[in-house]
Amino acid sequence: MLWDFEYFEPANITEAVSLLQKYGDEARVIAGGTDLLVDMKNEKIQPKFLVSIMKIPELKCIVEDGAELSIGAATTLAEIEESRLIKERYGLIHEAVKELGTVQVRNMATIGGNICNAIPSADLPPALVALDARLKIVGVNGERTLPLEEFFLGVRKTKLKNELLKEIVVRRPPERSGTAFIKLARTSEDLAIVNVAVRITLNKDNICEEARIVVGGGIGPTLLRSREAEKIIEGRRVDEEIINRAAEVTSQGFQCRRDSIRAPPEYKIEVGKVLVKRALMKALRRVNGEE
Image (cartoon, rainbow, N blue to C red):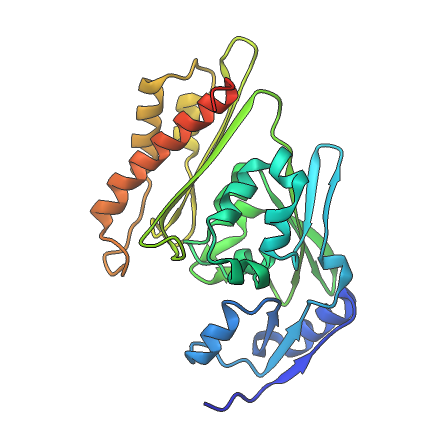
């Protein structure tokens, strides 16, 4: 197969955004290329222009400022996995990264690519949404900020408009918070059948002040944050009965496709319910220092 495209290596964000604006839908951003090059090889897409962002230093960072963590879009998954800061203070991200692909993939793939590819089975977006992640996006008209959960429009569809994802910002979990990430896949290297990220924050009286329940995998065209299930937990003392109700409500929001190659809808609904329950129970144990 003959690939015919022009390749650019902009030195900074301004140059990259200018190229994306100039070439529009005919251009694609490339970083690690673990998804893009496969799609090109399989002729799913045939971009005329590739804009590499791997030599833009502003896009490779892991920095904490106060109670917020910023991760540059071109930061590799291996760099995130190896970060002591993330492992100690943002364990939910560390758990999700460890579940993603192989060592070789994590050495090349970037956090921005995992997000912007907009595949519902991606592992990092559920974990990031559970930490209230925001995206900083740059275009020719300047920078804008968008909650990650509002970024996805469907399978491989996002709100980017000839723009560049600059960085991802998450807030550190409050005191007395427990988090958990659980993934079910056919193999350890495969995309998720279902993945779940949760966070529970309790007050001194063990009443839940804040909850996040986010599910990915093939349960719909995008990930699902179940606000209805979160309301069941918030304001209450969390126990197994409450968690069972929240898991049931979460699964009712699934929109599974029947043509999935990984599992039928009935299976995803049942296993998703179980994973939500397990994740919430694990997060609760972690709040109480039991795990």
